[in-house]
Length: 415
Image 1 (cartoon, helix red, strand yellow):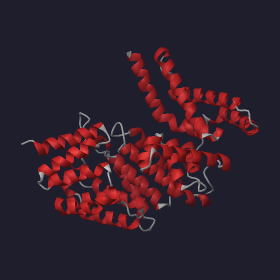
Image 2 (tube, one colour):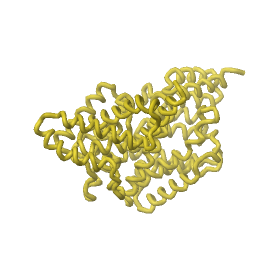
Image 3 (cartoon, rainbow, N blue to C red):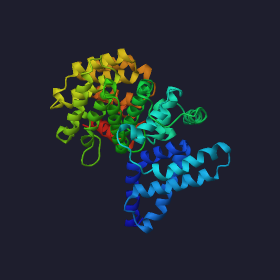
Image 4 (tube, rainbow, N blue to C red):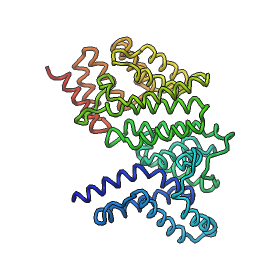
């Protein structure tokens, strides 16, 4: 590939990461068709791959992609022959000309927020709401969403199709609901933003991190917190994502290899973002409500973020927060994280005992074996740790994760 081609591809990747949600959301708003919106953007990306290497990257790549996607939508709408499509076409064609590039002030005017609340309509089943938003807002593949839900890809594909059909047949509008109707959608909106961030923070395949997804989720959580300034869970989620994302730069070393939390250079953490996260958490506490699911996780993240050194971490309070999480919403993944915390609070033997209590509920969940391997290593049982590290490396979800586990394997296997 020529240098110009490589530069064009890099510019296209940056433009798609920055503009994808805005373009797709705007197209859905005016066409009412999720699949059409995604297809039109993909068509624009393919055209960019054809033209940019030869013609050069346009001055405004996002506007270029928007124009091509809009034209593609126009062409498709014009070809639709049913009376229903024709009635919608006249309005859609006019709105496409003015709305795709319009900037509306305030959180209600943000198309990403509108798309979030459209996908999370209470008429849709909860699982369908979350899956559709991960697809439309997060840009996750059907396979990635299926992994998040622990179901097969074909099953998830059918679920997405049924959800889209429900939106079309029920005439669900693309808008933020009236203030008194927000609460019925908030739980799904927060769950979706959390899952988008989770996929960006620890990807299920490919590269270990998807910074575009994580950054998008942080922005979305901020928009939701602005929309719901008195909702402690919205504030708690925003705090959690800020505090987690603040550690991003220290999660890899100069060579791109993974670095565990205890070994991270805390001077590389984004302390401005930590301060913003702590402020959001303080606002959540000020509501006076008992801490919920996201706020409790934010409290844990805050304890990590405010420890000057790993040895200063208040593991007793972290275990207590995990206990509260389990009482509020039992989950084997939360129990797994609690076992890790117990291992730091009471020693690795106690951590292994806590892990044994939950292992049966996790099945072949890949991180389970990695956690067991680390606790065995800390317990001074290198042979057993080596076996566990081999098993964990064999099912690692990303290449950097596999390399990290193999490094640990060498540490316990070699004199």
